[in-house]
Length: 70
Image (cartoon, rainbow, N blue to C red; front, side, top):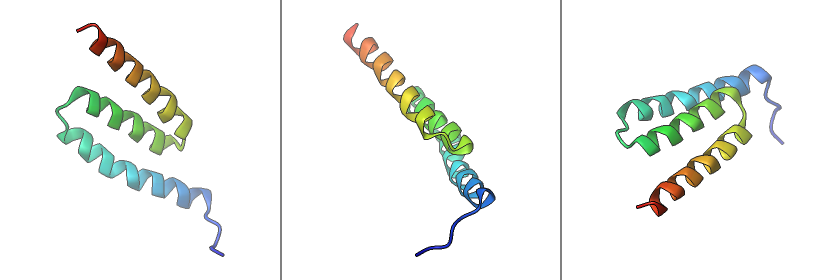
């Protein structure tokens, strides 16, 4: 069984993961992908996975509406 992680260790892991995503955001040209990556980055930096799921669902809904209007 593994050793329990401290809050600081978990937070460090989230920040580390967000660093790569921030690099991807800077390189991204697709606005939808950029927004999705931004939501993921915020989620990782705050440790709030519900934030990502809820807002990604909203993003998909908006994209679906835009596509159906074409």
